[in-house]
Length: 311
Length: 281
Image (cartoon, rainbow over all chains, first blue to last red):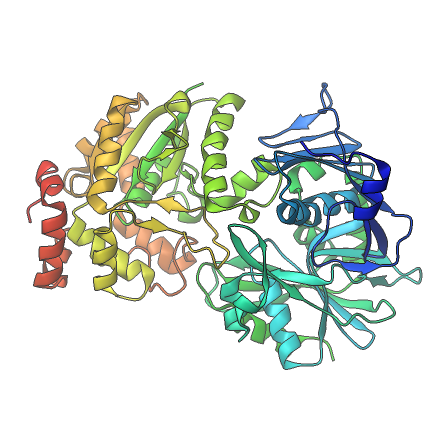
């Protein structure tokens, strides 16, 4: 394990990033996140040891342990991670630190878990905005959310402002917004080629995984109100189809967490998560976008989405 | 705890048919079980269950890292305990990961290995992919290190599956008999003598040897029933480009559908194993 020898060394390495309206202060470089002037972090990422969670109230899987306050997960030969109280992310590298991989797991698993612990409604999806109108696309990994969102943005004047991880929060006037997330998205080379983008121009997320960091934005100065949510799924249907969802169906369909799905459901924030989800599905128009299962064209579904986005 | 029964086969060899039979045998339903809800045979290469066990998205792992986690996930499932056998569908060859079998004997109750004449496999496989590229399928079946879902440039719904060549696949599972109980089932026997073939499998699995129950499960999983269900309700395992998953279910089609060169290539590469299984070239 490698840890900072003194506070000075740590401070030199530390950077502050901004995403989902939060400052993230990190000793680990977080590729693709927007940097900003140094300041106190809402979430602190440190290289430091931690004790393994144990006890009867700890729920564990193959590579994770979760209690009400903390989530720990391990990535073999990379690092062990702990996310505590939505404020602290601790990292214990295994061997010489592979910071690119460590940073990738922080942004894709640890930060989403911290968002949940902060009782923010964090879902797996994409946010596109046009003017004061925001549309959220929620769906499981690999379904084609990012491809659809990038396809729409390339054809029309929509902008992708959050991807992979989406936070939905109240604006205080009965409406909901989805603040900008990371400064990039991660896209598989195959999808990039379909979007007529050259994969070699983008940096891989980590060694051995060819998914690429693709910058997004620019980001609007103010959060736009969400006018509609699409839940993207695949099923045994002959062609892409869109249908409205009532509040209860929307609540059930929207429950697609980002990051560490199963362990998150064990944390104390779960009740708040469900309450917020119910409120969102009751107040925001939600539609189900279904694409045919297995091997269908993501572009055909993106076309359907594009043609039925709100004006 | 040894709870897992691997339902293994090269693709398009009758695995889904066998699972449909088993589902109907185990459930004893009033009507045939919906093919979209075949419980026996959760898929060994499915990404979702591994993600749940890991606690994070396995597509963030390299292929090698995923392979290691797969092996561990099967051991973990066995440690969890499960009443009765847990049936898991497998298309991988029986290979090793980090010096140990991908499908660990420590968690294995038994394996059913389903095999089909490679000529017919190739025709059915080409139809399944929707491209009717018999040359490509035949050459894949002869590739010693053939794998599915190995592309690193896209999200794969399933985890990488090392298949080896067709005969490499067969030999790997038959060689696994030194580590676990493996029962060989021929597609052609499922078709020509279902009562004996399915009955033998039920007896091998030490499930209730009830002939009426076996007959009913055979009836509820007949090719016509499966095909009719697909026509009316669709089938989730069908690829989009594929016209239908349950196509003809014939034996011997490959002999006429393949070219002389394609048949010769398969016979040259796999003749020894075909002979061992009683398949003519």
